[in-house]
Image (cartoon, rainbow, N blue to C red; front, side):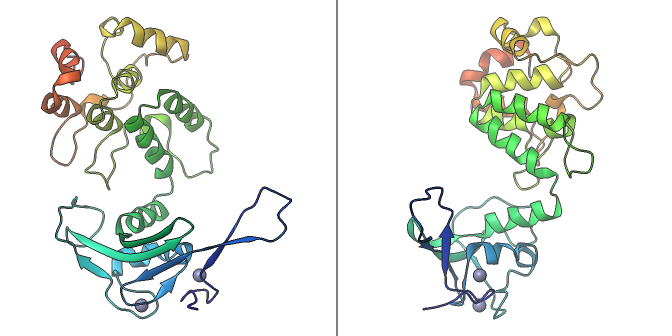
Length: 259
Ligand SMILES: [Zn+2]
Ligand SMILES: [Zn+2]
């Protein structure tokens, strides 16, 4: 039976068991095999993410791990590797075996977060914008407000204006528009734009007030509508490409920077 090339322990993972009746620890497979044939625990290899994202070489045998996939891929300004690069693996875990599983996106994200730990909160915020989790956003921004001084974190104004270097420099507003999350879009405009309060639909105002969110008296930072992604597109430009759901909001000019 192969062992992990880093910690040399068997390729299993002990599950945390909340159930006290089960005294035997439950072992599940945790075997990440890369193309050179070396095996790792998922966490052991991901602990090497910083080096791996740059070298794209196997940490134990130094083989080149990057392959080029034929399919389309997002260009990644954070990573030096060519577009289309992948680190294909065979990953066996509790859920079964995944063949040709590309771990490069997750390695890249891990390397980025190791270098920029303060971005963790902002990346969680982006997931919420995509999923339409209005309550989660409000809670997260209020947590950011109360973060300890010595924690690596961002203040709410930075979180809300965060542009993802791994995701085409999109902002939360870009993602909300792209995913059709209208409630999130109004919330973000409420918090981080100069759009007059009377330009908001009644339900959006009521929701913001119910959650106790004030309009900013003045914007210390940039209006969120002015942020552009790597292709120079504002959230308004993305809404215009999508049409449909966004037609009314576009027509009212609510997404237009400066209204
Ligand atoms: Zn290991
Ligand atoms: Zn190797």
